[in-house]
Image (cartoon, rainbow, N blue to C red):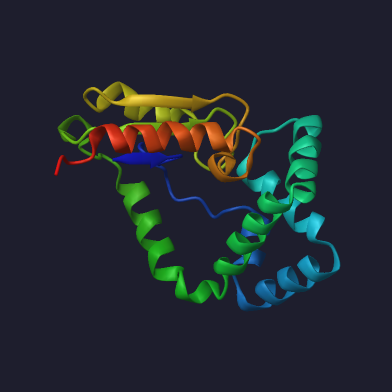
Amino acid sequence: MVSISGVSKPQPSQPGSPLQRIFLNTVGEKLTRLTAKLSFGTVVAATLDETSTFTERQRAERMSYIMNTPHVRMLFEAIFDTTFPYEKRWPGTDNDAAQARRGGLPLEQIAAPTLLIHGRQDGDVPFEHGEFAAERIPHAERHWIEHDDHLGFWLSPGAGQAQSVARAFLRRHAAST
């Protein structure tokens, strides 16, 4: 099992930020798509505000990296495009929220080889969730991504290294044929 920025602790219901509430309704979707057409950088910046605890300097550096690295920008655009229509994602979002409120995951009972990957500056699922899981899942391996956010596994300069760690873990634990 590979967990990337996974929720492991109970989280009380939170109403979400004003940006999230706007972003996830039909009117917000239209405004967000229009904003992306007019100023894609604004969407990247807003995403980083939601997914990171970056300083202004770190945010500017990551935004520049995403905007000026063609394959990373294409991946961000693809992720953005799959977000909509959000109404199709509501059942999963509601389930995630219910599970997070319930908490009490039986982490100590996980028997599968486990790799935990978590950015220390994750603004969506705080880093403490990675630490919490690492303390409870027997023999869990961990790869903490030092200066990365919730999307760092995919959209950071260190993404390739983090992905290599995950690939090596999966190969090492693949069933023998």
